[in-house]
Image (cartoon, rainbow, N blue to C red; front, side):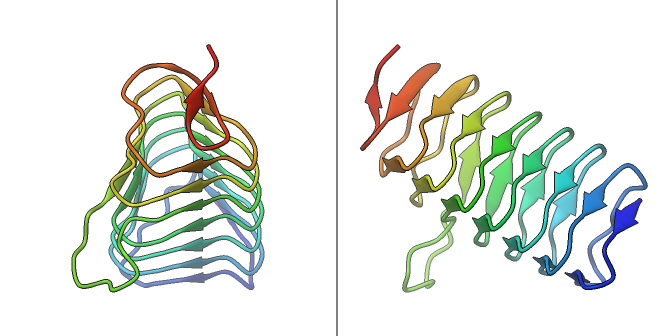
Length: 144
């Protein structure tokens, strides 16, 4: 286990020995982290998130509450996935399917869960669910 001394991890979060957590990362209560997860520096993970085995969360990424990254998800630098609306009165949850790749600076909105084997291009804004495998760019236009 490699947890940087500046990382702040809520005591309820169990970090497996195979997990790496970078500098200035914050992980809030109720989050579940499985084996072989890499969380780089300056990442913020909200309450009750789930990071399944093999996920990679790059520098500066943000996961708000109620987000699930399934197995082998790559979550790019400065990307944001929102698990709840701004009013936070209702928790919706957002799921990023296994083997998906979320490019740098992408934003995934609440209820815009993503199917497995999806690539979301850098800088994309996804507001609706992506139900089919493929590559999506811009405002969620499927390109292949």
